[in-house]
Image 1 (cartoon, each protein chain N blue to C red):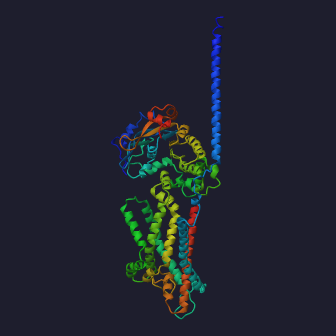
Image 2 (cartoon, rainbow over the protein chains, first blue to last red):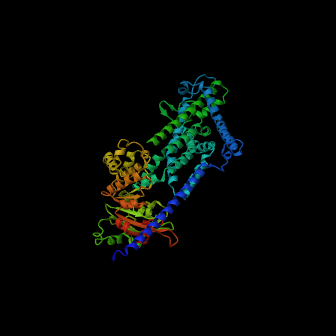
Length: 346
Length: 283
């Protein structure tokens, strides 16, 4: 009995609790249902609505009537037109060269000596060899000097006075009138050695080549990622090993491009050679012996001399020489490019 | 570049300091790094950092950006010599010899203590030449091909590159490039390898590979690694040092807060800063 008495109130309590739970569950269910419906309603309403409402599509359309669109299109045309215009002189010159110079092209041009006035035929074999030798002398001087100076400039600390002085001088020298290089070499070499010579011509050309090689080498070496230099030094390489085994090989495509640019410029120069190598109607080597200390023919000077002559044969030879010179420079450039491409692929 | 040596670290005194009484207790410590003050110009970058690096173990340096952990690592093979205005007060002893002793050639130091950088930095040459670089600069006379193969195998990249040893090192993927750099570093058999965030430029798969590699390499080499990745330090490092930035004196000077076994440090950090950093309670 004693344990039945407390039972009813307990049961009542449990039922009350159950009721409350049921009531709350019902309310909750109702709330969920009503909120879900409200959500569905909202979603349906929004689905019907245009998400781009308020966006003015005419504003987005491409239209020629809008000043900025028109301006952009006109500017594109102007830029394209200017580019085509810039190509006109290049192709005009090439066309003239091929047209006028190509007619005369023959093997004899490369094997024979320049003709005397009124003489027919002839060629400019000695001038081709002279140009090659003098550009060769200039390259032997400037390539090592220019690359090593480039290494110094690229490696020198930023505040180095010597480096900024050299860099400034090289930049000034880039715009140096080529005739002044000729006058300088005339005073410094021709007068001292007592005569016009291939060596003097080579030195005059080297003055023109040096700044280009210095500046492009410096640029190419400075472009080598710093992390490669760091890797080399981190491996325990000395400064010289880093330059020789990492910086120079990596920068070689850029350096080669600079050398080719310089060679191409030097091969076409006339003014410096007029004062230093003059011209010669004979081969630079006689009876198998090369004499670099005598006046030497070059393609550029030959073109200069012959183009002004009143003889048809000489003028035609000048055109042919011009074509050969352009082709030579082109070949040098192509070799340079293929060399640098090989470097990159490696 | 004068490395400002305190009078207390003159070579003569070093011998007595690192003399017999200490050697038995620290026999497995191959590098003993004690940076009192480290300056870049007038900027005090690191102070009071002592990290002993145990042989054949991986020691990790962790800490927020700018706390000087890379600077400390670069002290260990004198890479900081390249930075203008670098001054250093303290000592870094490698096998008991202070590598900042004026009589020591930093170039020779770097041949014993190699380095792997944050960005994979192979040279713009073939895979073979990349690995043979260290052999060439050391005028190695033996069989280079064998050495290169061995190094590539140790760096776990041999199978991937054995058929294209003459392709450019730059043609590889980032993770492969980094393993190539590790091969290049181990080709000369350095005793210590310093790794400056070697995985921060890599994806998780490449990272995992490098981590596995590190665990293999520690059998042979001693490794010190800087990492931003706490899980990485936890996974690979035997010892961990936590560096933090002290801004109290105006500048941003890094210093060592805590150093100890990695497990202990990550589970039960002693210092408040370490605890906050490990739990990610500040950036």
